[in-house]
Length: 128
Image (cartoon, helix red, strand yellow):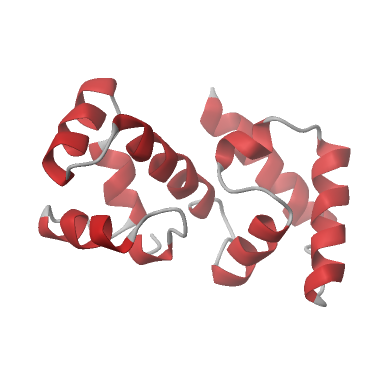
């Protein structure tokens, strides 16, 4: 599980507060935010809003896709995908095209077709 500090949509002040709550990985964040009640409890504990917690959870879900690391996070962010919900808003051809464009912009190799399809499929599976 990626460390919590790999989330780019979280303000540093909340990182420290989450760590004081024992949340050091995105997997732990996903675990403690599984239900609306748990999300509200965490928001209260760290002094954030439930919308913030939902945003962190969305990005954490994306970071936990198979074969996903810092370089892939940067690529998806460049393509405008900040979290799982952003992936769910587009069809597979659009997802593929935007990742290709982002790879060109970053001057990196795009992911393979299999990887792209895997991320897209996983995103839809997680959303169910």
